[in-house]
Image 1 (cartoon, one colour):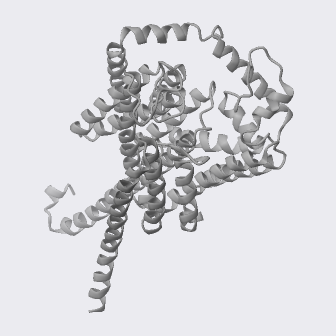
Image 2 (spheres, helix red, strand yellow):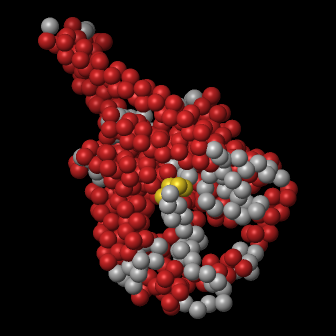
Image 3 (cartoon, rainbow, N blue to C red):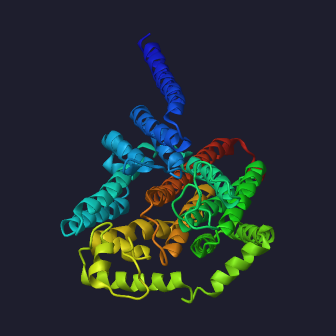
Length: 490
C-alpha cells in the first residue's frame, strides 16, 4: 500500500509541474495581449520579452531543463530596453535561479579550470579598468553564462537526447532568423527594423557579420546532423535538415560577409578532419559537402556572387574597412603585450583614445577586431588562458575520441562549429553580442554531452556483448557431456 502511494505521488509530481507551467504560459499570453495598449509594435515586443524573461525564471525554478531550453531558443531574438536587453535579463535571471543546482562532480575539470580562470582574469582586469562600471558589466555577463553552463552540465547529464534537442532548437531558431533576413533584404523592416548597413541584412542581430557568423554555426551543426540522420537511416529527418541547410546557405550568401563564409569553410574543413578515421562517415560527408557547395553556388543570384568575389579579391587590405581592421588588430596586440592583466571589458576604446594615433582609425572602437586578443584585453593573460582551454579542449577531446557512433559524429559537429567560430574570430570579435557568449558555451556543452552519451552507449554495448559471451560457454559446457564425441569433436 505504501509503495502504491509513493508511486501515485511520483506520478502526480510531473503532472503538477506540467499544469503549473501551462498556467504560467497562459498568464504570459494574457499579459502579452495586454501589451497591445502600449502603442508601437516595438514597445509591445519589448514588454512581451520582459514578461517572457520573468516566466523563464518561474519555469526554470520548477523545471531547470525547460529554462535552459527557453534561453537557447530566445537567444537569437534580442531586443534592447531601458539600458539593458532581453538576453541579459534572461541570462542573469537563470543564473540567480539555477545556481544552487550546480553539482561540482558533474563539471569536467577542464571546463571548471577554463571558466574560473576566465572569471578570475576578468575580475583582476576590472580593478585597473578606466571605466569599472562597464568592465564589471562584462564580468557579470561571463559569470552568468558560465554559471548557466555549469548548471547545464549538472541537470542535463542524464538526458541522453539533450544534445540532439539542442541542435534542433538551434537550427529551428535559425529558420526564423533567416526569414527575417530575407525580409530585410527585400525592404520589409517589420519587427527587426532596417539593416545597420544598407544591403547587408542582419535580421535580429546587431550587425551583418554577426548574423552571418550565427548562420555559419547553424549550417555546420545542420551538416553534422545530416550525417547522423543518414547513419541512422532516418531519411525524412535528413531531407528536412537538407532543406533547412539550403535555406541557411542562401541567407549566408545574401549577407555577403567574408567572415561568415570563412566560419562556414573553417567549420566544414574541421568536420572533415575530425571524422577522417570514420571511413563511411567521411566518404558520405565529402559527397554531402560537394552537393551543398555546388547547390549553394547555383542558387545564389549572380549579383550576389559578383559582390562576394569582389570582396574576396580585395580582402588583402585594399578596402578601407580592412585598413581599419588591421590597424585595430595591431593596436590590440600591442596593448595585450604591455597590459598582461588586461584593460577590462569595454575599455579598449579608452586605450585607443590615449595611446594610438592612426590615420586608419577614425573613432574609439569597442574592440580590437580579433577574438583571442580582445579576450586578453578584457580578462588579461589569465582570462585568455581560460578562454583557450574552453575553446580548444573540446576539439581535442573529439579528435582523440575513438570512432564511436552517431553521438560522436554529433560531437564533431559541435566542435566544428566552435572551430568555424574561431576562424572568423581571427579577423573579427563577435562576443560583444551576448547571444554569441551563449552560443559559444552551448557548443562546448554539446561536445561534452555528446561524447558522454557515446561513451555510455559504448559501455552498454560492450556490457551486453560480454554478458552474452559469459552465458554462451556456460550453456555449451552443460550440453557438451550429452553430445556424442563425433559431434563434439573430441
